[in-house]
Length: 388
Image (cartoon, rainbow, N blue to C red; front, side):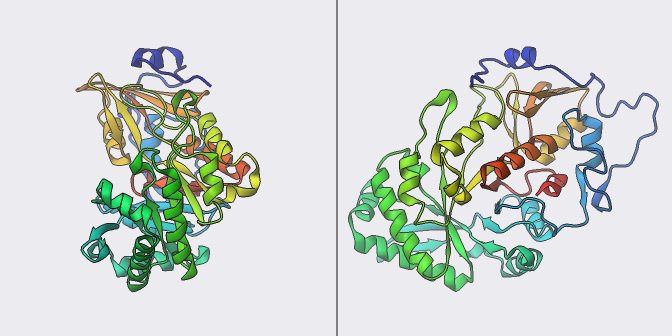
């Protein structure tokens, strides 16, 4: 697989455009149709929205409308959805759609303290919202598993933790006590990527001991992990050996299969063959793949002459609404849509998820036997959740 995109011009030249150049508001004399919003009686299939030849007008007309069967799951595997305090719409999504088996609010941090360790961030915990999410996801037995970020650890403090079983046990007991007091169901451990692939044996020991203490109290343990393979086939910072060493210790691995491209190397967010390669590298046979939650990005990237950066659903819709000229293309190689937009600020080349691109990744997860993890709820368009 070779998906190197050295310049925006290469992207634009080699992808066949399937939509004309009319802007989304250019109705050519036709009466405007009021966009749909909220729960509707028809599915995305019944509205004819699941295909590669989507248009700006079709997206603007339908993105805010979702099927009223909000608790009826279509995807058979586990679904983890992340929620962040800086994206309030994600809180609404989590309590509207009962399709998530795991919901991870980005709330908690563990830090060194004078007497050992302390868990901070509990001020963000909203008990009323937790109850709403539990009600919405009762059919799937949804579990609330906040992300736990390791923060303010110096090099010597990491070494102390790695070198002392007693310190690791104290940290584990601190985390267990915090989760039980907050009446939460487990945790997503976010620490592997912070050390950039260093001290992997020490990290394995730490995760194993913390996970054992949590699982002893029937708490779910998920480990967030980076891609197994990077651009151009470079090995990632989490290998098959790491997976094998921890697969019996944790309940799930939240696998980051997005951010394949960047402003320095513009291109698709998550080429589908690369996603497959990341999963198969960790688990060549299907037996262990049920513990992998394949990452789905519900945000995109907006590339401009100034470089560009991430774009979420609200910004994407605003960009389409303000467009003077829009072309939407389907890239057969990555199985993603590319959107070329010209507005008063200039030219944008946007890779943003679509119903079709998400649907194909969900079908891939079904074939591989994995679950999925979504970063993050509220960043996508509301009709995306019909696919879950």
